[in-house]
Amino acid sequence: MLSRHLKLSLATILMFVCSIAHAAEPSQDGRLANSVESSALEAVKRRIDAFNDHDIDGYLAAHHEDVQIFEFPDKSIGVGRAHLQRIFGPLLERGIGKTEVRHQVAIDNKIVSEEQTNFGATQPETIVAIYTVKEGLISSIYLVEAAN
Image (cartoon, rainbow, N blue to C red):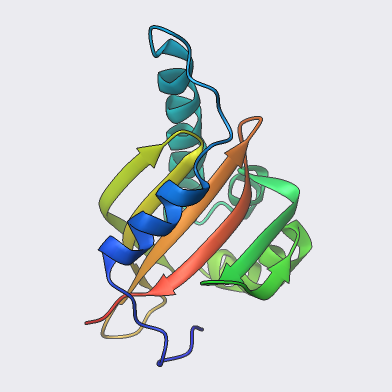
């Protein structure tokens, strides 16, 4: 899915996320930031749980209608739920696919998630996904193939 030449360290990715994580303005006591982070974590959890349950409707429902998917740093690889349906619908309907979250960091409405995904191959693929969540739905995903 991702080009093999694009392998970045998690530290580089975190620096990128920190540089763009400014959507929520934290309150004096920090409650807004915690609420925003909780909402973002919940949206990503819904996506991953639905994927692992092979529930294409639940999977799509975790995303904004016009979700944008990128290969890090800025190569567009798809837009919208319809794109996700074309890619993942046939796999999930056949019961193929499993994702395991290895590490996850929440920064405002951004989630950086190291994941191992298997589509029936002998070796799972390790990726880092950077999710942006707005109004409880995933609005963009940046994918980075992790170095093995």
